Length: 302
Image (tube, rainbow, N blue to C red; front, side):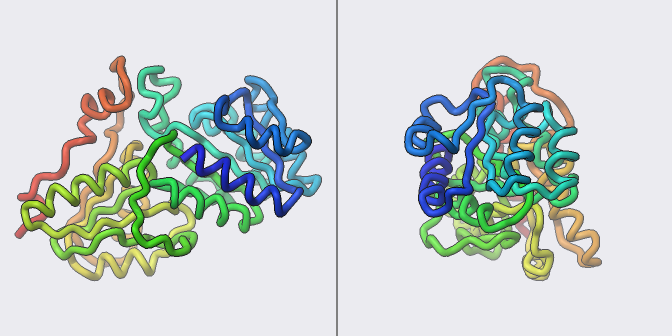
């Protein structure tokens, strides 16, 4: 996803000289090509994330379209007050690009785990929250972010993710995207769980179980009428995210279900209300926190 991000940003920057990229001493082996092509529109502020957001806000207020790149916990939590006041309160045209969704940087410990970021960003007024699930969604959402005037948070995985989409149609902000069709279960994923969700669909398919896999690359805003159409199918719904089950995708969908007044069997799958104290890489963390275990058939089959 990182490569898709920087390549798409370069395409946009060639057409619009207002685009400016700022990093807080991150992005080595990723951002060099942008820096070389646009040396006067690139700034490395060093490890000073709070200052970075203030600088980005100032650039935006001078007419720039600013993208800020860093690891997720550092670009969302370390500088939360600056994001809330300098960016969101002023509706500054700054796009926060966070890399390392979930346990991507698992071996580096809880300081680098990104399991609360969607909830935090979703709670801020004026903030758009985008969570692409593969390189194609990344390309599309970087383009959509450019079209938005105001703050945007873009949650990326890392690199090397496969492209899941077969039909590469334009992605609209707020809209769910059906990847596979099925009448036994609706599985809604976001961000870096799209690949895992697709593997579950394939495994269920071998058993003759048909799953409607839905990617939700936008968490805020979200088209509630499109979600209600899924609810109206009266098929069990599961949300899957590598994020706390509090405040993320699961919470977003459950709020719509509750306010719709409609009944549907529903389950949130993700990280329970806990930190990881385990030492190990991303896959090890996922196994330890039991977020790789696909749902049992007895839960959703009649």
